[in-house]
Image 1 (cartoon, rainbow, N blue to C red):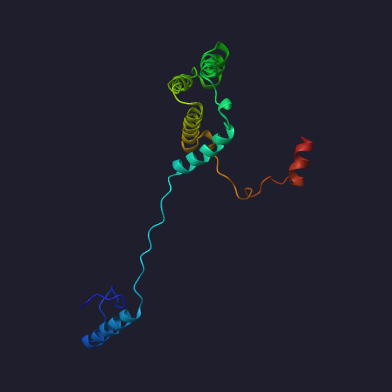
Image 2 (cartoon, rainbow, N blue to C red; image 1 turned 45 degrees about the vertical axis):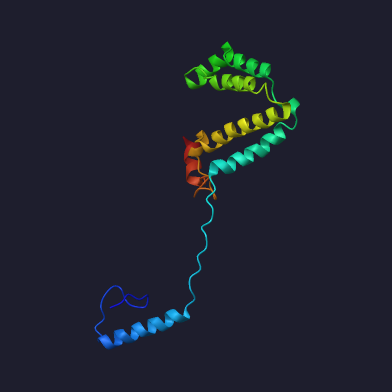
Length: 173
């Protein structure tokens, strides 16, 4: 028996083969009437990182509107040296139990030195791209705030209602 979308795939019917042949003929006539399925291309999958990167690039464009707003190499070197100062390192040791890693500030300083040969506008665009990539990576990676779930409604019986029995017991003791 030929497979048809109108036949029961879960068991053979007790009817005769004549009824199955009529069902097969009816299926063929219904197949002629049904329109052919149209194939639609699948929706493009947008990578979350790419979306966040585009958002960050727009934000960094606003943050660094002109070439004067891009930090200079001496500023980045100062930030690197301040990162390794005693007070920030002690604060990090107190808060996190380890010294702060400042290598990314050193990498920013070296990147700034590598941009010295480019013109000012190109340096601005490359700096914006670098900062956008850094922030996008931080936003896409896990965060300490990921453990919290956003509630749509408050929990049941919150805040708990204080009954008269509890208040009278606590006031007599």
